[in-house]
Length: 372
Image: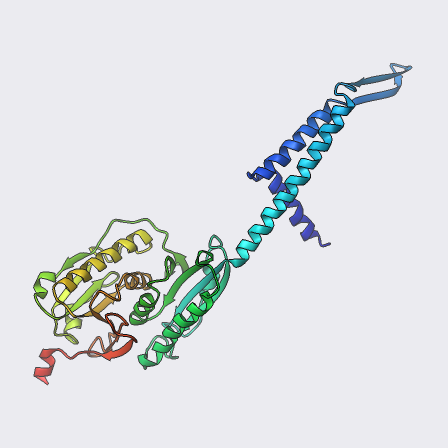
């Protein structure tokens, strides 16, 4: 037997004996304590030899303090309790291992903004999320280091991820499954992923920390900042509106004007440098987002052109809040600074009766069409 195996066994046994707080460990410790106490009450020390130069002997002890019948009866009971508690502990351990073997963690990672694989999300999932890791990678790269040549070709990998995800879930108890998402993909594909995963219960969302160059959880404090909403009243009775959401950068009016001729409703954080590393904050922002969508729907809006400047995790969380059955038709656009129009294409989401996502191209504004 290897020494590291022996060391592990010794450390595990010591940890269970001294630190465990379950019933069997208390019984085991109690039995050991009783054995030490009762056998300690029957001890004898004998010495034979010279004592101050004279032969002699000394005998000190408490032998007979506990009758032998009681001594051995208590010893047998304690031994049985120790054996029983050890068996109980082993059964608990075996059942726990069996339970953990059923646990699965589906790690959905979107890759699209960089050609290199970088640091995989799967390796960054914390140990506190228990279960066998199942890697689901959406590779949305077209070997142009973030440049999307043909967005239509990338719709299938996203749809395929959802199909594979559901296949892997079959035959498993949902309580044994955990889903983790993180990605570096273009805004329309991130939003589409969120829409497709909106009914998957709680999803642990991670994001790429550019400063630390690592994946991390949304575990920061909530700074209390929320969207400031403008333009709803000005939209009037328009059937189509542009919803511009600014979380990390400002969505500029001049950029919107290159593509859209519709009224603009804005949702903007008062401080675009504020931290987005709070799940509580992102959930609150998603609630605001849903509230504005409901207002637009109540005003008679039939189609929303959504423009987002936000971190991947924020886009994903906003998307998961979109009500696919009760809210208007939705197109989410891609921003390209070097192109004109600035929003050359978008993805029509599978909502409001649209069965399959499809790519649509930017709308030329009325001013441009008249000038041309």
